[in-house]
Image (cartoon, rainbow, N blue to C red; front, side, top):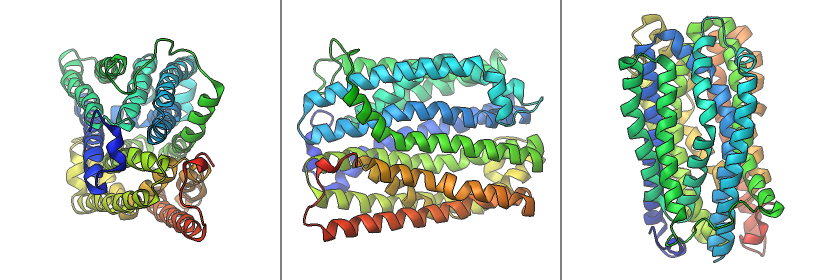
Length: 457
């Protein structure tokens, strides 16, 4: 598997989905668990206000992640399509561009964020009590962004070019180092939330070294070339076009979390923001598992799309939807049945536990539908349908959630904020399902099957 990506066009779909998705799911679960464990260390080692300060950084982390995903997702999709077209040199060129764009984006975004850090955090909802924690955390993470971007960007390329297990090792190595360092820095050295951030950057540095070592080996089918810094406008445009969907999804998530944080501050104070920090970690665990599934789906869909094999593309899609729904349904069951137990992992503060438990019960009410919505959106990205993927990325956040966040909290207070989320999740699923039905019907009516020439339309 790791040496022959062309098996993507011949092996049984179920077998491929397990082989490619399982390492990606393990990677995403590990990353999610590391975020959860990090929050647990911060909650018990620093205090409930530190959890609230960490929640204040979510929109900023979404915004910085947007620029990373702009390159990482676009590079991964195009490289897998190039492999499907047997264009090895084209895949190498995409890899070179991905590396350079990751470095450039990280320096620009990280530098500008550092210049206006306090103003940004206050805009995101920081109070006098939570600002110091949020500032301490981001002052460590932002200078390390080149490490983060290169690790994530090249790891996506690694998975997309037929090396899912090697890509899993990147996440596994990084997370193990982080879980070891975080408690040492927080509890032993008493570095607080700065220690948690420093552990993250150090662990990602080792992950970056791993991916660079992989892509500098001449034995790797797709590897970095000698003059990797030379870039072409056409390839940059293609990467940004495909990556625009996850980019806008992260940007809109940033905008939404700003609204959520400010509404929470108004209707529940810093403690409500802390509760949202806990809910976000729990919900994201299951979302990240589904994203791991779509990472495994992406090279299979992209390769077979590039190779002109529509039946294999469809089988991969529908099997992925089924698995995605099962994943988010399991998360729904656990959070509805044991909300106090999962909330108490993060803190011993009873008020915070009760607030987070009620919030998570409401927030996950439509979770069974979320798995299908995520898979469908990523499917359109995988076949290069940039415009449709962008539209679906924006529906949940801007078209549905934002208006509900404006209308419902004045009526129901804190419950109005929590309730906006499941309503938006269901409507976003209905929109994605309608778009998929329209697209498949269009294919059936057409005399042409799925062709790689339609990529980017």
